[in-house]
Length: 96
Image 1 (cartoon, helix red, strand yellow):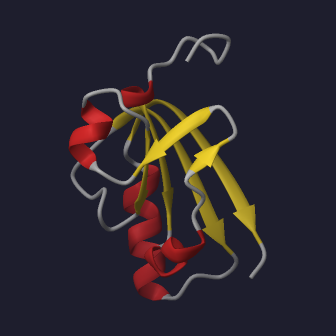
Image 2 (tube, rainbow, N blue to C red):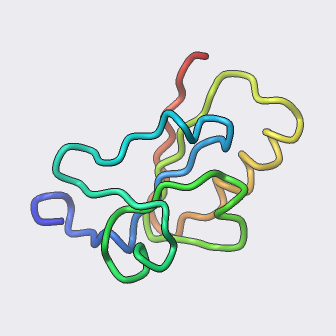
C-alpha cells in the first residue's frame, strides 16, 4: 500500500464483532478488503474478520472496531482480538 505507511495488505487486519459483519464495507476507497484468509495471506487485500474468526492468528497491524459495552462473551473476544497485533494496535470505538 504505497503512501500508507509501507504496510502490505497481508500485514493488516480489521477486526470487529461478528454480529456486525453484514455492515462491513467491501473496500476503504483505494484499499481493497477481503474476508478470505487465503486471499489475505496472498496479499489480495486487507482482512476484515470477526474477533472470534481471528482467534489464534496475528498480524503486524490490527485495527479493532468496538461497540459500547459488550456482553461478557464480547469482553473475552475483545481481549483476544487486542492481543493479536505484533506491532501496531488501533482501536476505533463506536456507539451502537
